[in-house]
Length: 369
Ligand code: MG
Image 1 (cartoon, helix red, strand yellow):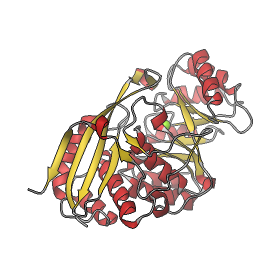
Image 2 (cartoon, helix red, strand yellow; image 1 turned 30 degrees about the vertical axis):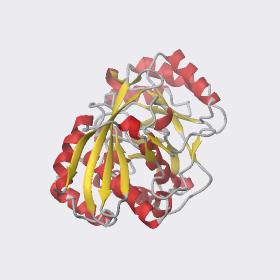
Image 3 (cartoon, helix red, strand yellow; image 1 turned 180 degrees about the horizontal axis):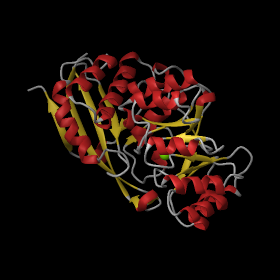
Image 4 (cartoon, protein in one colour; image 1 turned 90 degrees about the vertical axis):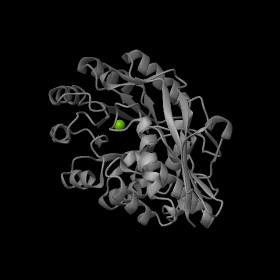
């Protein structure tokens, strides 16, 4: 099987809640997602999706996905999409860095590997652990009472894990954490995600002020060393996210005992192939994971479900159902949340079919002439 064409569509995904806010006054109301197709001489087409969390969350932006695809795709025509390690070597040789550009192609090739072998991606990634994957709900940054009301609403919808967007004024953040903490039921878990928003002294003040609260602290500061300093001064379970953007950072953080949980995002690491390596490393090292992506629609949600469901339950901290946050569905067959959980599909590949009527025209189209 050979790659004969790589194309992409741009799909807008408006947020059901209207907008999503996090540290530093950052917000998004309509996500700009790129659906990537990899066509082969066998007639099979694989699909992937890349959706940055706006242009200011990670070093990634939506138009950059498309520009990167135009740069990278000509190097991949004629290669086998099923030889995923070789394909990734070629992508890294042709374009240094830019992991998010490679993620959609890699995801589409896993979809092809599943379709060609008749197996769901979940099986190809290691098997199906347990009945379902437990999800968290991200709680957009607002005033403390509004965030508490939001958590109550999502508890009723079945969620048991909540990720509060903090990283603002420390006094307000302490109130946010306390107002939501009192709503937690046995078995619920609360994470305060500062998304790099606190300076080191602010983070120290917050973790000390909530020392009596059962809450995980996620990515308090911008720099790895600052996070490490906070980590070493708190007994709260500690999560790293933004700074773990490569396998070498994951190794470094593991060696430093810098986290109890790590947030692995598929596009942050460059696709399912590299995220699987990171996932397997974390399992071997005993580090639990949030398995997800920066954002996305149905195709990303399907890929997340396959990745998460193929991860041993003991190390599966949480995962995400991004398709329930947005008002547009870009594919049929994607898993849907049930009782705060998600299950990977049983069909070959990612198990999704893009909705042609939603995708519109191709904005990238590279093929052998
Ligand atoms: Mg995070």
